[in-house]
Image 1 (cartoon, helix red, strand yellow):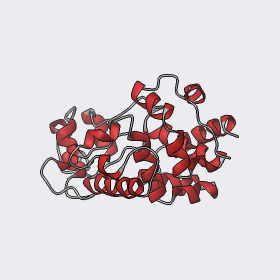
Image 2 (cartoon, rainbow, N blue to C red):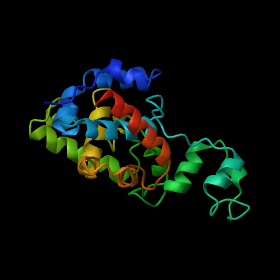
Image 3 (cartoon, rainbow, N blue to C red):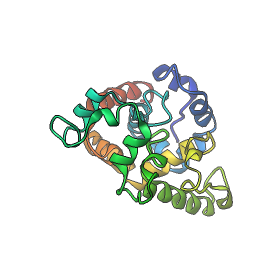
Image 4 (cartoon, rainbow, N blue to C red):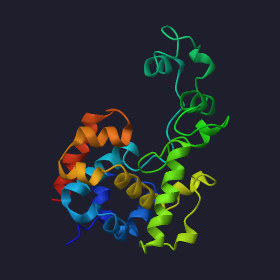
Length: 222
């Protein structure tokens, strides 16, 4: 039997959740079921732990790229002075310029403004042109195979419309597709928080906090 995830349960962990995220989970049980995330309490706990960390308890839609000069030097010491070549003051509080610097020329970002256009968005902070294209392909394939929700022709081209990732009709579906494409259900079955975090984040940023979220979610969905 599938694990039921309700908005009332989520609100115990994320009382300030954004309305769009609230709506996504209100209509999202079938999505969680389809992608196998609701198959076990452990999968639900790990999935929500990553979501809650990446979205800052369901309050954030876009990656925060507005840094002070001091913080830029701390986060990217190899890029910014005193240890790197760049003046952090030239990038401070300038999300577009910073995104194009740190994301440009990788993750499929080839055009001048791609770093900013395909900055992190949504429940799991989808990032990079390649990732937006991949999710488009995954959801269209799933819809063609009678996934819940939408027929294949209605799945947006997330490369052409990146903000569609935030639409309540799609944001949970995008996160679930991304999760499964990275093999995260199996890692959740193994209770492997370290590898899950690396698959989602690309590193181990916030590992301790993700672990706390997982424990808190596990107390609700047990």
